[in-house]
Amino acid sequence: MIELLTAPTPNGWKISIMLEECGLPYKVRWINIGKGEQFAPDFLAVSPNNRIPAIIDHEPADGGAPIPVFETGAVLVYLAEKTGQFLPSDIRSRKQVMEWLFWQVGGLGPMLGQHGHFKLYAPERIAYATDRYRNEALRLYGVLDRRLAQSRFVAGDSYTIADMACFPWVQTWKAQDIPLADYPAITDWYERLKERPGLRRGMELGRKHINKRPQDDAETRRLLFGIKEEEQ
Image (cartoon, rainbow, N blue to C red; front, side):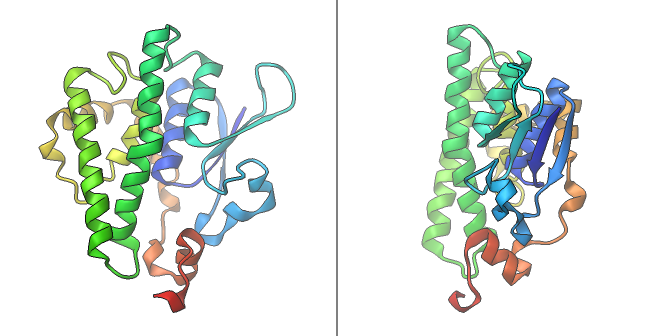
């Protein structure tokens, strides 16, 4: 049994998509990041970076004690290796998946996260910061669009954990005011992936728990972004 410690965010949905797609049984422990539960000692014991999501594998392959895993890239690789799914074993295909997975966790996710923060959540609008991260977000969309113009999926001809890592962030395009129609290869990929039942179930996980926007509550802003009221 996999225990998923998560919240309904793009990073959280990466892992619920994978769990649904590979068919592993799992249970969810919701972490209310708006109330600071990510700083609780029992959560930090699993995820020392105080970020969701993380997992605990209560039935690891070696038969030993439960194994905690944090950071989405590491979790996706761990689950892929555990199940033998969505990560090719041949050296060339595996290399491509790892390249694009690291591209997402090091680039697409963080840059879209920063763009979304300054566009949607920052207590004051800073044109330089918003423009800087928007330009980088659009550059990364261009990278992904050129890639998907050459291959059916992010890492080649097969659907892999690289697609699962990218999709939840691309689906924020409306909120981030990204002109998706300007990226036809991404649009085609996005529409095809939306039809996958496992992906849809993974993306639906926890949506009922979204009940407050960070910009609406001072304590939530402090916990998520380190913003104090006197600094506004």
